[in-house]
Length: 73
Image (spheres, rainbow, N blue to C red):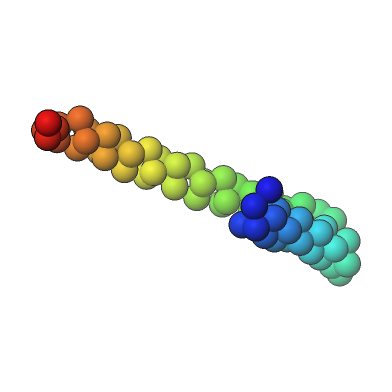
């Protein structure tokens, strides 16, 4: 694995461990905590879906532009 891959993996693992510790050590009641987690998950899911749609549209436009571009021979 290259350095960037190792960094990303380490950052992801650190975020995961930090999140787990925060959940375990929080003084919030279980019902409230589950509601917050669910709401956060829904928000993140919607943002990821929107980003994926935007990226897909950008790629479609780029593909169309490249297909219409005349080639030099």
